[in-house]
Structure formats: structure tokens, C-alpha cells
Amino acid sequence: MALVQDELPKYLLAPEVSALLHYVPDLHRKMLLATLWNTGARINEALALTRSDFR
Image (cartoon, rainbow, N blue to C red; front, side, top):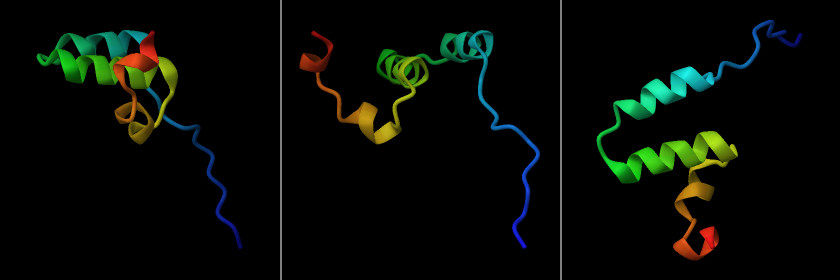
């Protein structure tokens, strides 16, 4: 018998992400978190990005 999950997936809303980014002191981590949230990329996909990917 399969379990039915009634809850929707939990995610952060834009104001919550903005507040989170406000408290991240390191620019590199802030950019990583912003990239993850704005693109929906997985962590391994974001970490594999290079500068040339943004040109």
C-alpha cells in the first residue's frame, strides 16, 4: 500500500530569500545562493559553472 503525501513541497518565497541573502556575509556564498534560487539549478550544476558561462 503506497503512502499518500498531502503536503505540497516547501520552498522559500522571494521575501524570505531576500532576508536570507541579507545575512550572508561572503559575496561568493551570496552569489551561489542567489544563482540556485533564481535558476532552480542543483548544487552540482551551480558549482560546475565557470565565468565563461555568464558571458
